[in-house]
Amino acid sequence: MFVTHPLEPVWDKNCTVLILGTMPSPKSRAAGFYYMHPQNRFWPVIAAVTGETLTYPNSGGERAAAERRALVLRHHFALWDVLAGCDITGADDASITSPLANDFSFLLAGSHIANVYCTGQTAYKYYTALCQTATHIPAVCLPSTSPANRGRWPLEKLIEAYGVLTA
Image (cartoon, rainbow, N blue to C red; front, top):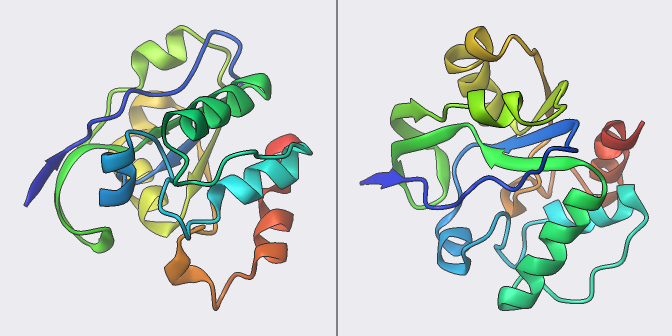
C-alpha cells in the first residue's frame, strides 16, 4: 500500500541537527507525531541524552506530542523522515518499495542545520541514495530505536550511541 507521509517536520530557525527516520509507523501516523509506538525507545533515549524527563508516555496523545516537540526544539534538533511516500507493509522498513524522497531545501535554508543523523540503516540507505546529493550534508547512521532492534541494542547502548547528538 502506498503511504504518503502525513506529518510536518518539527523544526525552527535555531535547529542545528536534523534527525531522520524512514517513514512514520502506523502507530505514529495514528498518533500524529514521530516515534509514538509505545515500545519505541526513541523518546527515552532523547530524554536521556538531553538530561530531560518525560512526563507523558508515548501513548499520551496531544500532551505527549507537545512535550516531545518542545524537548527537541529546546535542544535545536529538527525531526522529519527521509521519505515523503512509499509502498510499505505496516511498519516494516524492509518492505519499502517505490520510495519518494522528501525535499529538505526549505528546512535547510531556514535553519542552521549542519548535521544529519539517521535513525537506522534503512533511513540512512535512502538518505544517502536519494537526498545527500541535494543536501550536501553527509549523514551519520545511528542504530534503530525500534522494538524490533531490542536484542541487538539494549537501551544503555542506544543512549551511548545517541550521545553524539549533544557532543
